[in-house]
Image (cartoon, rainbow over all chains, first blue to last red; front, side):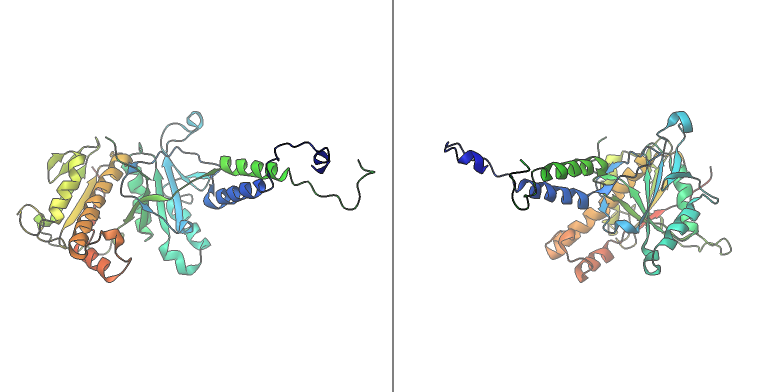
Length: 158
Length: 181
């Protein structure tokens, strides 16, 4: 810089860009804090219904997700809706069932908050209630009664 | 260049912005603004098979029966109804206070019973549930405005006033036991 100035030419001064990294870092931190890593292996399609009276969940770590929907890879798994826990397919009952999954999740959490855990059923809008009902029955059997039907906020269009 | 430099050379920070941009773009692409939203529901406890279910005499007028069939059609009090009219109907039911003999005695006694078929789609079920919650929210809001001059959401959370409104309009939405057809 100083090298050019010595030549005595009067040019318009260069814009100081030294604060640019600060601005970019600020944005970077905002996005790092405000966003959540996308689950790398979503196996089912979940286009949730749009409704108006949604509630926002503050304690995100108190939520256990159950995903229900038709598999994304239809070629491999067929079009019938399936249940997904964490990153694998599950069933209603059995060792890979709803109760086993919720128990596993419960045991990961400290004892004091186990009663506050909510199960969020993120179901595709095309899924039939029969499947959801079976999940609900399993949850009731193990006395895990806090439930959330995942939905996105918006005005309902007919 | 190397020969002319004296002392510790300044670290060039010009590329810092590039690195930060790279990270920024990475986070922009890999993350989602995933907001946890939905309808919060409390399930009824599972009935003990050894204990017979208690017989509760429920006056028919206090129960608003909502049925959603496998064709996603609505049946309210045995009459077909469009979903747009459900909120109004529910509000009429819970705000009736004994005026109309077909609706609830009082807001405290009012119950909404929601039944669905196994073939009902999640979308319609959640929509119906949403309409019911909306009816309660609106009723609570109106009551709060009339009594305290403020909408329900402006009342102090878990304060006396909010409790009073909640007591006046308790959200009693009963999800019926699934029936095998």
